[in-house]
Image (cartoon, rainbow, N blue to C red; front, side, top):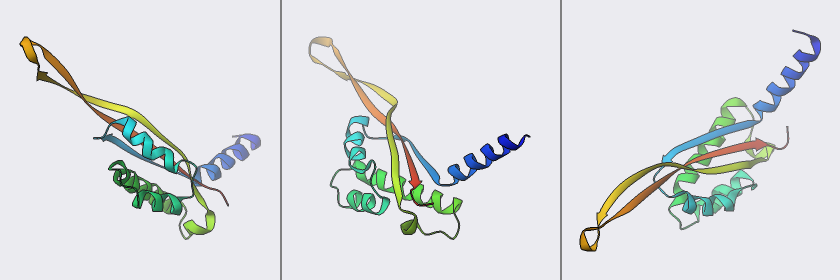
Length: 132
C-alpha cells in the first residue's frame, strides 16, 4: 500500500469512528406517521432530541426514542472512554422508508372486496460527533 493510500485510509477510519448508525426494520406504523416525528429531531443535538421524543404524544416517538438510544450506545462503544455531552453528538440524518406491506381483503357491499394495506417502515439514524 502506498503512502497516499495509507494516509487516506487512516483519515476515512478516523471519520467513521465519529459516526454511529442504528437501524429499525419493519416497524408496524406507516411511514407517513413516522416521518412526522422523524422531522422533529433531524439535525438536533441528541440530548435535546431524546427530550423531544420523550415528551411527544405520538406512538411513533416510542420506537424512535429506542432507536436513538441504540445509536448513542453504538457511538459509545466505538469511542470508549469519551463522553457524549462533550463531543456534541447530533442526529446527522434520519431516513424513513417504506417496509413490507401486509395485504388483507375486507368484504364490501354487493359482493365486492376492498383491499386493506397495513404498511410498515424502515428507519435509519446516523449520529455524528461534531467536536472531535
